[in-house]
Image 1 (cartoon, one colour):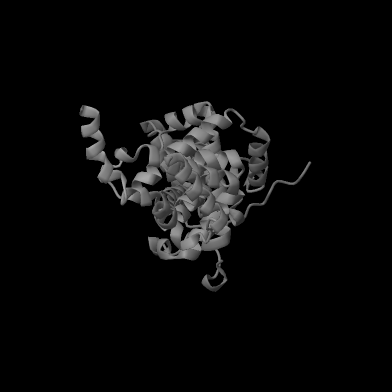
Image 2: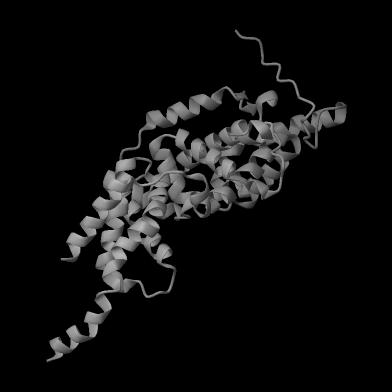
Length: 208
Length: 117
C-alpha cells in the first residue's frame, strides 16, 4: 500500500518533464562543463569523460538539487568533486624534473641572489583591473597556465582558481605541504613572468 | 673567473632608497645586507599567500622593498595574479572557444538515457 502510494507520488515528477532533463543538460551545460574541466585537467579525453561522469552522477542524485543554487552551479559542484577524484587517482606522480626545468628558466634573472635590474619585474600598467573585462587577457592567462608543467598547473588551479585550502590540495594530490609551497611559488613566478612578457609589457595593439 | 655582473639600474628603478650619495649608499647597503636576498624574498611572498607571515618576516619584507622596487612590484603582481585567477571561471565562456563535438554530446546523451532504464 505504501509502495503504491510512493509510486503514485513520484511518477508525475519523473515523467515527462524531468526525464527530458538529461538531454537538456547536455545541450545547455555540456560545453560550459567541458571548458570548466579543460582548465583543470587539460586533456580533452579526460575532460570529456569527466563531463559524462558528472552528468551521470547528477542524474543519479537528482533529488540533491533542491533548487538552492542554479542548475549550472550545482553541476559545477559535482564536476569539481569529479576533478578532485581524478587527481586523487593520479596519485603521487610529481615530476621533479618539471620543477627543475622551471627553476632553470629563472636563474638567469638573478645575480648573487638579487634581481638583474634590467630584466627585473616591470611596473604593470594600467593598475586598474580593467583588463579583467577583456577576453584577450583571459586567453593570454590561459596560454600562460598551459605552459606550466601538468602537475604544477593542477595544484595551482586547485589552490588559486578553486580556492581549495593548502591542506586539502596536499591531500587530494598526495604531496607534502613543503612540496606544494615550492610548486605554488614556481607557478606564480612562471605566470607572473609570462603575463608580463605577453600582456603588460606589450603595446596594446600587439597583445594576443 | 667571470667578471662581476655590472647590474646597472635602469631609469625606471623607483626604489625609495637608492645609493645616490654617501649616506643613502650606506643605508641601502645595510638594508640589503640585513634583509633576505631577492630570491628568498619572492619565496617568502609566495609563502605569505599560504600562511600570514610573522612580524619579523613582515618587517624584513617592508625594509627590503625600500631598497628593491623589483620585489615590491613582484609582491603587488602576485596579489593581482591571485585576483585574476579567482575570477577566471566567470570568464571561461568568453575566452575559451572549446566545445564538445556533437558526436560526444550524442554519446553522453545516450549514455544518460541508458542509465535511466
